[in-house]
Image (cartoon, rainbow, N blue to C red; front, side, top):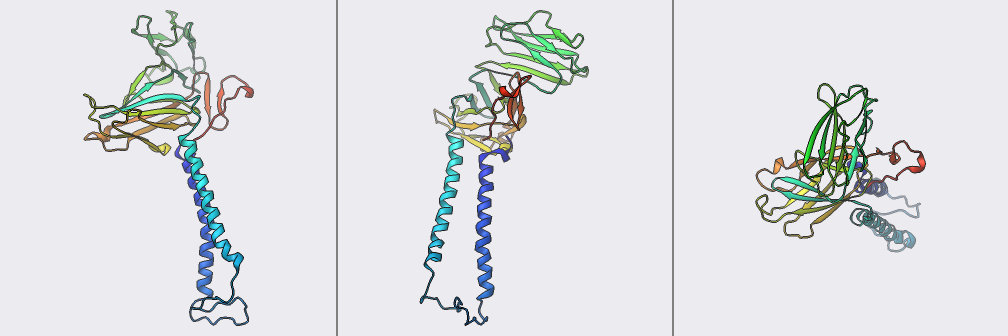
Length: 330
């Protein structure tokens, strides 16, 4: 969701259109009157509608024209007000029934992202496919990418621990030798595929509810073409914060929301990213000596089995058009 996709950007374009249209008529008439009726120009006495400089034609007037001077501007102001209110409604009163919920906390000097629900995502267009169902073995197909040679798996075990495993790719595909499974699906899992030089080629990840990520080392990961419902809180006085105000700002999206100390319910920010990619996060409120280092990233990804398509919304992979998901903009 670049800034040019937002409702405020569209609203700016509409205001510019009507502003330019009004300016053409207003300044057009202004310069015409200045040139035609300026001092020193003799009026045409044969013209019934001639105007004498310094004299107001009180003897006669055009009632319809004078009424239009009031009616047209009033209609224009009402129309622009409707446009502005419609944009505010889209931003602050969206349908949040199917939204993806994130809790964002601000400290000195980092952001903390708490996931209220699960997210399983995978890179697309890499020639690699990872399948790891909620109950079943890990299966990786790298036949579409001959550079893939090594798999690193961060696996949450049933006893609450974490296990790191490395697997070599055999003939383009592999089934984890230990038949790795995870059940129930509330365990965090991470699969990364690398080439011989150690460059990351592909990522598959399952983020479970209750997962916490911290900036700047860990990005906020959100699904594309879904309404994101982010609750912003500035945590009270503790060893990580002194209760100052912060602001969550994504410059490329043209959006910002303040963290207000002492506001128990926090503030809420809604956005719908429609472009996959990684975008910078900044704190836009001075919050202390290390304010400049309070940065991070938000990564927009496709859910596992889907792909981000800004032209036609989110589509299921390997499906026909009847299974399309509707995308959207904010």
